[in-house]
Length: 561
Image (cartoon, rainbow, N blue to C red; front, side):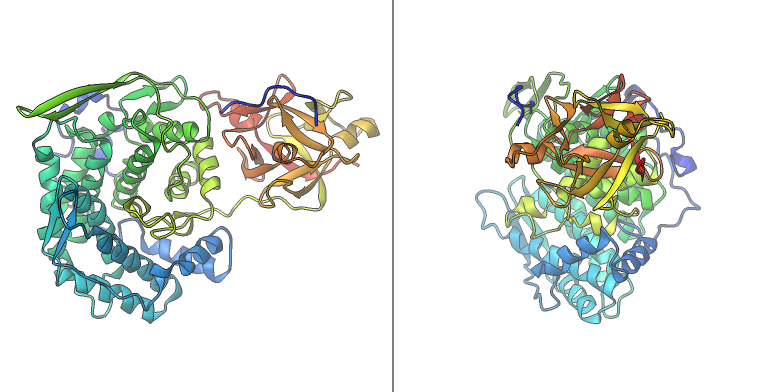
């Protein structure tokens, strides 16, 4: 995405993994998990959510706190979350061409089980618990086979890990047959996932994209947790770290650009929808592992974090580096071919998937790391929904979603409207966002001895965004607004056009210090207001500069009189 041309102004967590962080790819030839940690019991509930998570969700929703309340509103508006939902279990699920496909029945019922389970845990309503229980029991007593083309391995992986998560929430619920569901995972889902990771359907190891491996790693890990099977947990963790397939982290993220704080995702040349699918699946693996004491999020010097920033940045409309990637496809002795991708694909660019709030929460909130592209994309997705909110096809059910409700640990950053504030620089506290006689945005020093004009130019009335009331616009005392033009911040008179309104609207995200904000452009969300050389610009995020987080952070304070 490019700006319009100028125109007339108008940590590792278990000792077992301590050695893993920062290990180079070449060192991963031998599995790091040589034995199970005998002293570490499997945590329950311990997949995507823990008991503490549910306590937080219930408390925040009860208090109508944001952004949890918005996430809750989306959940209860989804028809899958109704307690009257009735399961339609099948003995055999088919996915793939040449078969009577019926897998849509399964992913709809999984979404209903999960969403009703959430409503029971958060709301305490037994009717929702009963609905989730009955859906799970119906399938565990009926389903015996996953069949179809190679796509059956997508069924085992995606629906296996999702179904196990719903069952984990319902563990201990009256009438829920946990043993039967554990057997369903062991005997129907896990065998296919295991077979895929070992044999890859007889194809070249590179034939199947990262997302195929990742969904089946997720199923193996979820099965291990649900069934208290440490061997399966170890299998999933080991494969993630050092497996041969494309889902192993060094293969899923083949190129790291440390000088830019980014890392190329394996499917980036294919299309952006599958890139985000893979990102979401790896996020689910990392979150489940995290709750069992394994830090895969931070593995290999935060390799995954650099990849999500890469995918988010490109899908925000900004440029990213790209190294040619050759895909070797086919099966030995049958057929084969090669395709080289030379640039990131624009196909399905800016697609929305419900995965970003969880990623932002881990890296920015839990770890305190700078992930501005992830933060901006999470803002775009708000309010985040789940299965049934993103279309009726399988892509709308690849993720359980609702992570704004389930994963957020920090209140939404907001600004007071209708009041006048000065925006104080975080790293130059005697300087403020201002403008000069040329109307160009500047970082200006203001003190008690400054002239009344200088003080006035450092004050803005905060109003609802001209282009989006969820954002903000900053109005100067003479009625003009701060806006960007050719990426330079300036003061301009509104002409009422959509272009001006968008240029003058910003979203508030958390800044680098407590109480500070980062003002993200409404129409170029990969950019935010920052100061450089005492000028104000709307710049792309610099992930490696030590000064950018502070350069782009301002604290709203009482305006200079």
